[in-house]
Length: 87
Image (cartoon, rainbow, N blue to C red; front, side):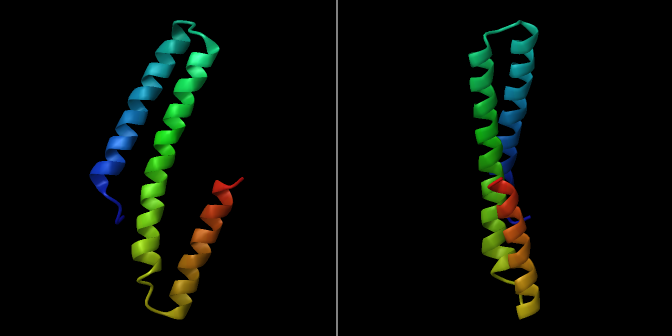
């Protein structure tokens, strides 16, 4: 993985902390909208981590694919990932 490990780890650890907080909110029977807001914030962090990983994959793995066949394979991987993201 070529992405900035520290940055991705920070996003994921923060998301993990938020998930723990959301679980406590549910246990405490907190207001639905407050829980939903925290869920969206956690999703945003996961999206940032994924964006970082995918961007570096494109900059390194796709860009540095040595042969046309290898490059096409890397591009096809990205097409599949993008398809999953837009569903």
